[in-house]
Length: 86
Image 1 (tube, rainbow, N blue to C red):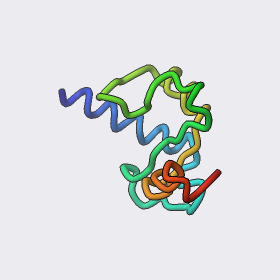
Image 2: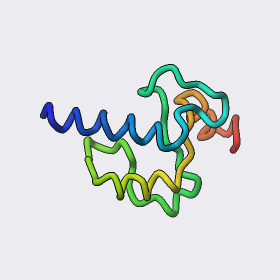
Image 3: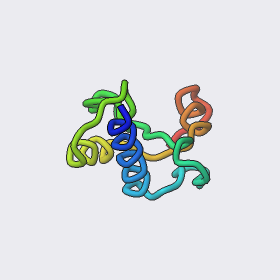
Image 4: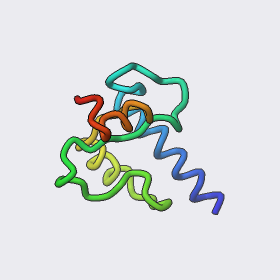
C-alpha cells in the first residue's frame, strides 16, 4: 500500500509540473493537493487522473494530461457550476 501511495504522489507532482505548476485561471500554486486536472472535452476523457487509486504509466498519464488544463480546486468547482469558463 505504501508503494502505491508513493507512486500516486510522484505521478501527481510530475503531472502538476508537466502542466505548468499553477492554476491556469488564478495562478494558485501553494499546495499540489489543491490542484486538479480539468478535461477540456469530457467526450475525449479516457480515465480520471485521480480515480480510485489507479496508477498508470507516465506515458498514459501524459496522454490524458494533454486533454486537460490545470486549475485549483476552487476554480474547478466554479467551472462546473458555470461561474467560470476557460
